[in-house]
Image: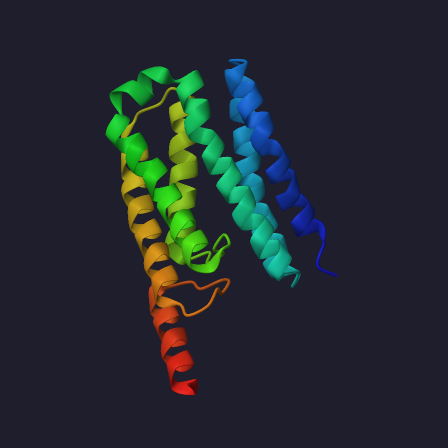
Length: 191
């Protein structure tokens, strides 16, 4: 059965994205931060449940990618509303983060006409780092963790772009660029 508890948790993350925007727009810093933390923690939990109980599926992979996209797309808008001071002083960092999310999505849609679902190791590391850094920013903490996390994000998203360019057809759960190269070679040998 493709729809399961892990997918339900992921679906809740999708529902939370517009709620995050609404809370930020209304200036409800505390509620926004609580919902953001819930979304970030549930991102970890849904994957753990899916892997531990063998509930992984193509649907779950796609839902997870959409939930990630919607959550991380809401963060810069929320930052603009809740922390415009940071957006103003850290324009380059914010632009790099936004571009790092947008470009792989565009490349994936151009090549495969769909959202890519690679879930690379670097993407996971950058998501954890960025999640912590964004929570720190919304809690009025230091900017340095965000700057470091964005550097890791840029590297992770460059890898995702390379994977898209290398793969002959869309694939899910391609953890590394090296794996995409192996997949491409195998496809070439079959021709």
